[in-house]
Image 1: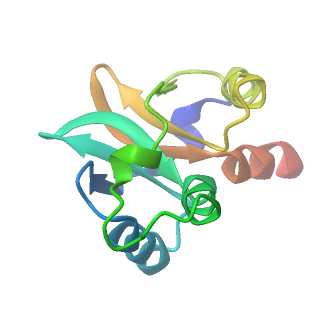
Image 2: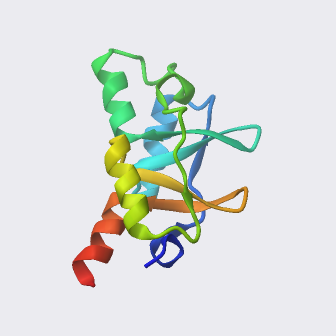
Image 3: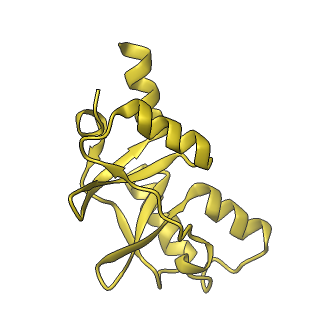
Length: 123
């Protein structure tokens, strides 16, 4: 099976300058665990629930601390036609649970560890 068969189309995003409070609101409203972080409409990172927890543990003020301060900037992505097992292996190796999905140079969605687990469970 390929990433294109199971990913969530559409990219839920935040701006690099968004406060952690804004990021948490977006995640809650959209029922997601990560957002692609943009700077001038270019993906520059990903911020996840784990990043927000780390910020709280470090006593960051969620109203003033920005997404860019706590996001992951070493961005791993999945290719649209990539095999789901390869994507899962890369996620496990990197210790991450979400991958932005690219079709060519454009980010078209996100795939999560949960998506990949569902594929393996229901095959």
